[in-house]
Structure formats: structure tokens, C-alpha cells
Image (cartoon, rainbow, N blue to C red):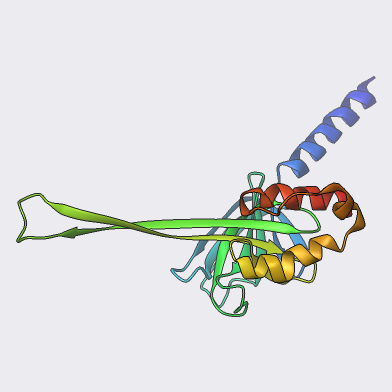
Length: 195
């Protein structure tokens, strides 16, 4: 009975620890850890990373040139991937986008907004003008690593939809119009039928 209790405690602690464990990905290899944190520069390059490794050692790496080439973070059950800022220039600036769909096709979503205030001294006192601008990225990552912008009609018609239609199971199941508002559900269906 005592051995069974010890085995139960060991398995619970082992599986409980690994399921809640953070990780980051370098060259398709996961590094498991806890207390994972990172910071980025204004251009979204990694500035620092800190974590506790599986041996309990606290690791902290600072400096853009010192931080390893990380492609994904898994923190608190959320995956954040490094994606190109522009799909047609994948080797230029990057963004870190939340993975909202996982599978053969991956979908990432990024949203950022900024509000600027303009005050006009010639106008009535207290009068000001606020303008909010934003960036939204909604990308699908193909199995070959190429990204396409779901918001781009050209990317949908030339690349994404033809790829989806190559799967017989998907073609026989989906008979919709490929509306942009339904694209997340379309990708989920594809991943379920065509893995």
C-alpha cells in the first residue's frame, strides 16, 4: 500500500509538473522550464529571456545578440510564435503573435493599437483630438513554413484556398463560400479532416 501511495504521489507530481511547464523552441527543439519571461525591443526582436531550468537553476540572458534564436514560447497554456511583420518579406522585421489555431495549418493573430492626442492651442481651452491607429496581423502558416495573410484577398485566392482544396476530405465536406469571417473555422475543419 505504501509503495502504491508513493507511486501515485510521484506520478501526480511528475505529470502535473510537465503539463504546467513552460517551454521555448529553438531549431524545432523544446527547452522546458518554469518562470519563463521575455522582453522585446521596439522592433519586436528579443531583448532578454529569463527562466528556471528543469534542475532549478535560474537562467537570465540579456542583449539582443546574446539571446538565442527562439521561434516560439509556451507560457501559461498560450503559444506565442515569431512571425514576419510582412508575409512577402519574411526575413525582415518580426512580430510575436498568439497562436490561435494549432495543427497542420497554424493560425497566428497579432493586434496592437496606439492612441495619439493632438492639442490645438488656438482652439477653445481643453479641446483636443484623439486618433487611434492599429496593426492587426492574421496569418496562416503552411506546412512548408510559408506565411500568408488571411486578410489579403490575393493570399486567400492564390495560395490558401487552393491548398485547402487539395484535400479530398475537406472538399467533400466544406461547401461554403470561404468568407473571411469564417476563416478560422475553415482552418479548424481542414486540420480535423486533413492531418
